[in-house]
Image 1 (cartoon, rainbow, N blue to C red):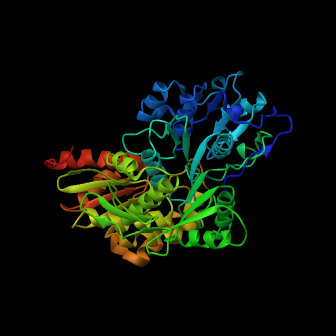
Image 2 (tube, helix red, strand yellow; image 1 turned 180 degrees about the horizontal axis):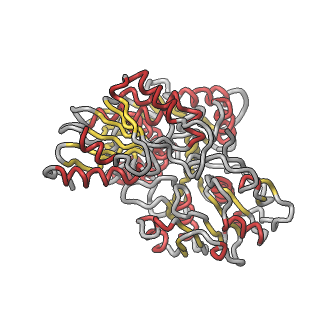
Image 3 (cartoon, rainbow, N blue to C red; image 1 turned 60 degrees about the vertical axis):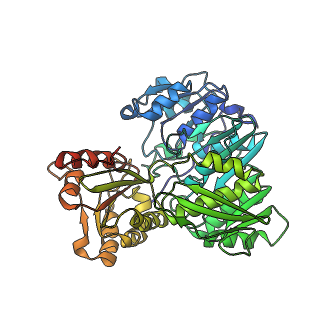
Length: 506
């Protein structure tokens, strides 16, 4: 099936300047969406006039409150009247699956229409001070959030796709900027012919950012963004070559190949991070202390130790890669250790929500099969009982392309509950890709361990299904970015109604 495509250029569109002045008075469609909020907050913090529309269901959310507090003019719903004639551009998430009134209005006004990734690249390429970028095919959220926290000296800004707990995803700073360039922020889908797929766009040329330091976290196939690993390698190699210094974690196979590619001709300074002494930054195996990880890094003959509250070896290694990047950028290890002492991980990134009736509930925002498999494995660190995984696959396009890998990623669970695929499509005529995910999961876990929740009148509520099947001592890991986002708190409420609340629940 087709997937998200870039809008075609419109020769009649207003010419945009070669600096990010095009974002001076931007209107952001679905401004609370992942990646969009951070961009809006940064623009507002720099004194720019920002308007944005928001899903009506999100108008009282924490994201909406942060945006309004920052001075963003937030309007519920999507309407042509929200796009004013004084706007310099309209930015959209890139994941819409139907004609959109605000994009139609932008076209009528001949305003530049920028996908979020395009707007972010334009902004980053025009940033006149030190730019620290995190890129890769997936798995950038933890590293980018750690970098923002580690470098937060009061003069550092950041634009993140996912915020750290109790922190905002966007913040202004006049010294340097940390930016998460991963494209994987929203559910990208096919769209009906004649809708936004053919919408004219700005004539603004794509300007690749030129970071002072770039961390590449991972490189692999990730549809619909990268059709295969070669495409992902080409994109990350191009980003690396545009940087002054690039940091590559050698525990990722794709990053190792990028390292080999960068040695064929002069280019950026390459710094490797690895688990053996041959790496430029040598990382000892992270030690789990029961609630946090002890991290030990060797850099330029010096030993540095940090204690960070993240769960899972993969998240601990992402923190190590971020710390290595900050060291390369010249940051003080002592200052970083002090700042990271209050870091609590990324929102919904293997986060424990609480325990009720002896059952612990944790959240995961993972989308890529590699990330899901790693979070499922890491969940074992949080319980001595069974691990029950609730998976809401993200998008028809992504689920169709990765169905076998998604099912296999659940192999570390004891039981699995599959929710309908999250998609903005109102209708889908093809086969349900969840069937293939279910078959793959059954192959690794057995028929009795894999269950499905169907949507519609009379179908069981997922939370009630879990209350009836989970036992004391179990951990329920909710994975997904759509309906799943509210399922964890709802499940805790239902567990509280069915038994005595755990004394340790906050």
